[in-house]
Image (cartoon, rainbow, N blue to C red; front, side, top):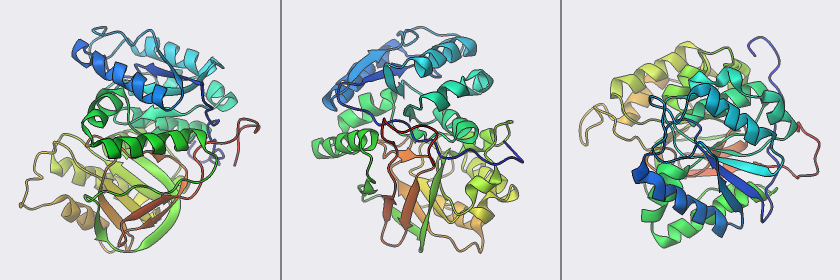
Length: 339
């Protein structure tokens, strides 16, 4: 896509009550111990009013190395779901380390002919970013079966769980903007200010990897964007390095704002010690005067707020507000792609 005009925004078609949602292994395997998470995910989506099916590769204990299956097998199953008109949304079972192996095997024409919501984070960030680059697809950096819908959702307070169910159902079925996302006490203003722009992002290590592929997002996609990212594992110095890559590539000079998720299991971010995550972020940003909202519940720290790629948002860091200003899905009657 580098050097050519990016494709127009492609909104998935809105779901209706009774539509079929498929849970699929898009990367890592399903350990038998986590099979109950899939059952609980089925319950979550059935309460939202949808039918739910498990894809064949979602079989407890099935694995190929660190993956649910060989990359070509996963791609074949995903392409079948993309081509099947009965399937109206795809929910990843988990993240992992496999998406890089089948980025070149995805049926992008099927995506453009019948765009569907794909939900997931972690390794699934690569899928969202590359399909956004190649097809303009609005991908949902959102919870998945393990450990999201079937894990951390189940340990959340009942009121929070009900709030999230209502939010996800509205996001998948509604063609009106959601408006302000429900806040949490963890949210922090790391640099005040306001911004409006399209959401772009994912797990920061996968964002950096995506930009190293032939399907990197054109830099123009970051003009005026609100960059969101989160990270799990590794070292604090890795996060600093990833941010430096974004600086060197010119991305940080183009964005209008930043939203940072709650970090998880990052070595070197010790309570009361320096550097803190805000210190790392502000060090790399330097004198770039953009708003930064931190410790937002997106990603591995879950339960997750959904972040639909490409959708215009309003950010007010000082007021700790993030608002979806456009619908993430489009009417079923529209001819796609849409702008």
